[in-house]
Length: 269
Image (cartoon, rainbow, N blue to C red; front, side, top):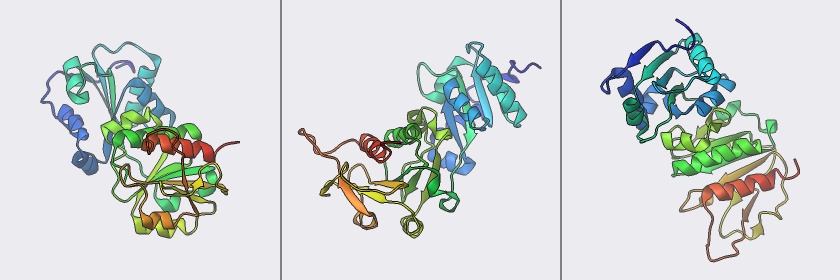
């Protein structure tokens, strides 16, 4: 069989493979399998470039020939994964969209333990406390990738970074950015050895985010969308800052605020 030809054709919506992939929309299934769903050839290409081959590659019958698709098929098989062709109806059912991507991939999740992180490997890192919105989290991961951050650390009860919505918002950066998750106590113990500055953001802070003196590597600590950074984590910061509001709005979207902080911390690099 050639590298450009899928192994088999699935046409039934009740097929076990289809049901298993569809289940990855649910957090319980993702936690049980340690897998997640990524949609689109661009996402697949980002994964391959990071050495991450799909466990399963689903190719629509109407997918157009493309060298990257041939590469995805070959690398999936080489890594022991499964390649299948599916109907448009199945793609719609899995993606929950009327105009689905023609290529879907199932990947293993990857979390980096705090102890394995090297703070000095990047000028800036991001830590998030109790983030609830998957779109915000995905956008922050994408921003961290764009700015060259070392990674994103999720503290306490954060939304799943491998939910379909969060992964979509990363635009493929989920494969390029180190993601860690930890409890508050574990984070505080690890933070004690941080070699640079830890900067928090609070609406009640006095220091302008542009005026804060910081030592790299900078660790940007952002709080929950509604409540902001808790007092306990704010107290561990070397400085808490605010982004000035010049109009009627009293706050910024979390992903936007994080982007401003990250680029302020990396200015001049």
